[in-house]
Image 1: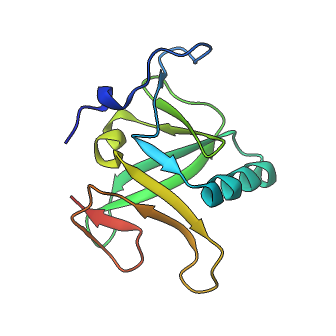
Image 2: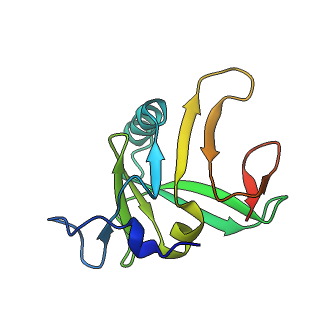
Length: 131
């Protein structure tokens, strides 16, 4: 796995203390995913940042988690993608590198979909994977 430091952009102005600027080599939201996240942020009003995390669990060992947070934490990597500020912790960054998050309005199999080039296997629901 790659060092998360290779996924960090050069120093950016106005970042919260202890937060590093990342780039879309870490995670990228497609235009439809960005539009949906923006709409959810406006509706939910529970935070201005999308946190993407990978946790243990699911039928293949690891699963994706997304939630809105009011601010990044010290040590987080902040990526501006799809018009949305996305925060990722350094451990998640190891497994997330190169991942694309898309959104589909389809009635069947619609919703958010992760395309992770690091996943060796994933379940049929697309919410858990193994490396």
